[in-house]
Length: 156
Image (cartoon, rainbow, N blue to C red):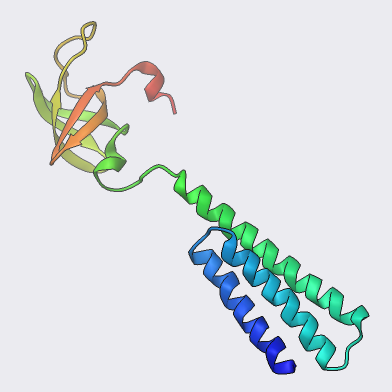
């Protein structure tokens, strides 16, 4: 009976750790149940009374439940984070015009100099000048499509 309890404890621990890597709550709940059952069986088979076995099992279940909740919250929180790298990470960033002629030029965004194009809006002055702040609208290959930054976008 002790071997069964240890096997349940091992399986429960594996399932709880797996929950951290594949969050979905199912593995965590199954792991917690296995830990509770395994803890009660091990303590009872080693001669412990029910007054000792049940609190040990409940404590193991509470620890597994806490781990499951923590890992699930972190996993769902990371899905809401905006992309920070690559082309998608540049959209919405603010840059500074370094050189410009007609509808194309160079802008400095996130520590790099990029080729950029500008399609002005109706009410916007058509040409950008060196030192103007721009917002990246989209990325096409290595060329950024930018627009003039509005005042509220420049406030930190």
